[in-house]
Image (cartoon, rainbow, N blue to C red; front, top):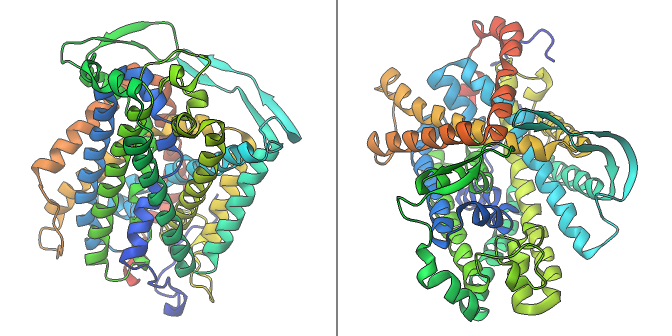
Length: 521
């Protein structure tokens, strides 16, 4: 993968460094815009089926919000200490060592960032298909191969189709277009992000107003907010869950069921930290980064929780599969899990599907833009340390963007679209995302000990108690997923561990010669 890796260092001309083109508005737009994709419109159905209670549905989003906002408060300390391209990769490298930074960057490139870009691009194609029926995953242009389903205990591998169909062609075109926009300059990408994030915020606010004030349904209100709101939510209530994908069923308490339900909300928010990847291009990072992280994360989760109240105001939580009406299917069995579409259909009738599809297209487009802009900065930083393709460390001489890093990211994300594997890969990475979240919070403690006198213009609010509580909460969630949802955990752990031989065979030999080239930014 890397030939003769060496650190790209001070010999790089200053004129070929990244330009500081991200202000406070752009930074907040990156945080919020990267978080709001297609998840909030879909995952409440899966959560509702798992928890079976309106109050636990809301509690699930609140728990994720506490983790994300708590993480933002802690990450902000690291961000203002090390305002360099690479963000979380830099924090793990400096706090815990080069290996941990590399494993994060490896997983980010292999699955987390590129897989999410592919998924959001495919979601764009899926919802465009509502408006243009010829855009469909079954409309094949070239069908390479079908990989049959293989079961390894509770883990399922395969059942994917590789090739080009009209849906993934649309996804690839979106990725190519947005990569091109971001090559043309960080200011161009950031300006587009502001416009798209504003549109997405308006979309969620419109859903909230429509659900809570305009389209509220008496049957749904009675079902969700009467005595049923606290249904099955007590400390001693036991919930039946399947272990893995098998038939084995166990009962768990309400706290554990909320932890198990974190897969959806975490997927809907896992890109909240992406603004730190572009820290080297943020103006006045000591002020901008903490404000962007805390304001962006808090605002998005306030919108997420209110959006779930809007769903509950229009549709009953409980429903019946394949029922003839939207109301009878409820949130649990909304068609294809498209809860937002079901809500709009209940208010406006059959035209609601097309209204919602158009709105979600804007949301997906904005999320893809932010993910593409931010992710490339990590591979750029890794390449400067000899831990990625050497060419990815270069900066476009005219546009001052990591153009080659953007192109490499684009190629891999497009290949994931063609392979048909992106959805399964994303199922696998939540465990890894939470694991790196834990490690980054531990890096706050490590750097307080290792560098006690280093200037910290911002110190983590609530440290050490709040930071430690978030670590414990995250460890509990990962442990619960490891025990009850191995299909979401072991494959993700294996993906992370696959980076070990690469690091030790190639990168470790270069580690002793590393200099902090990014410190020159």
